Image 1 (cartoon, rainbow, N blue to C red):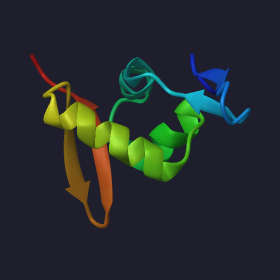
Image 2: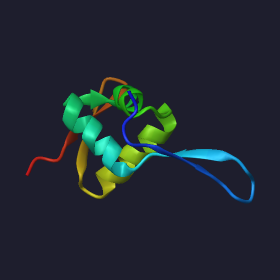
Image 3: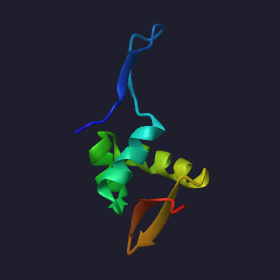
Image 4: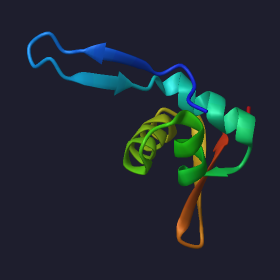
Length: 80
């Protein structure tokens, strides 16, 4: 079930785009615990590629940790 994403309309092109705040990805990880990129994408309601880009961004900011298990990245909240 998608979290708090929003749909906006570009006034110039008339196209609708869906925005997914970084907080949606953090909430999904907190809800799921150790979760794969695909699990998080499904929880947030976005594509795998978008989820992976956002999760890498959060990892670079130090807000989450990523671990490669086999061929799959798994994500967890940063332990404090």
